[in-house]
Length: 263
Ligand SMILES: O=C(O)CCC(=O)C(=O)O
Image 1 (cartoon, helix red, strand yellow):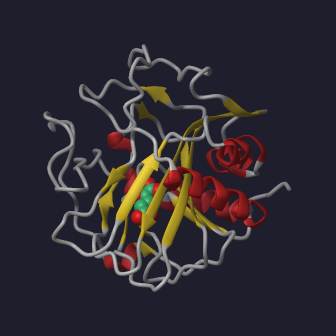
Image 2: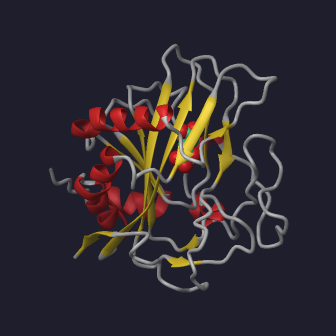
């Protein structure tokens, strides 16, 4: 299946850093659910619990599983995702960055705090995109919230650890503090299964705890395009990609981050 974004969607993505892509992944949901379950049954070394004992529920995340989970690998190589990123970023070549899963039991109080992804990552650039794909229909209340235009902030926002709100890096002088979140500028919508929110690695986003009565399962697939280069953040990034052996400004190596779209 090929998906063609409209000119309006492409310019919205450039201006707001976020769009809703409807129905694109409906044929992939059962596969993603199977892959998701495999990770829950057998988490990777990176699997992380974000709920402290004092808060109700469970908020679990894991990433970088696509090489061992065939369903995720198939999604990266064969779904329309890479082509959509190529269109939305006007890139000629698209590489996989990584996958990420988010799980919240019903009643989980712990929210996903407002954050940008880029400051945690060992890359810099604007031609980026993550698909956030809930594996069930999701209400507006439970769905992702994205601050439109926040990919144009003058600096990246200081990243923190979600489990204890402490600073992620030791040195933070390149980062700004969290700006005020203007409620009128938040992108937030209910979604049907198969829909995805596509967002730039630099936009601020968050989600609440799980206010529904169904388990919250969201799969994120992250891609990098033409202007993306490695950056040394002078501390361990998330994901860490240990042994990557690149210098700031280098292109991302294709053996670790395969090209999935080349035009
Ligand atoms: O699903 C969530 O709660 C967070 C998603 C997120 O932060 C992401 O995909 O980058």
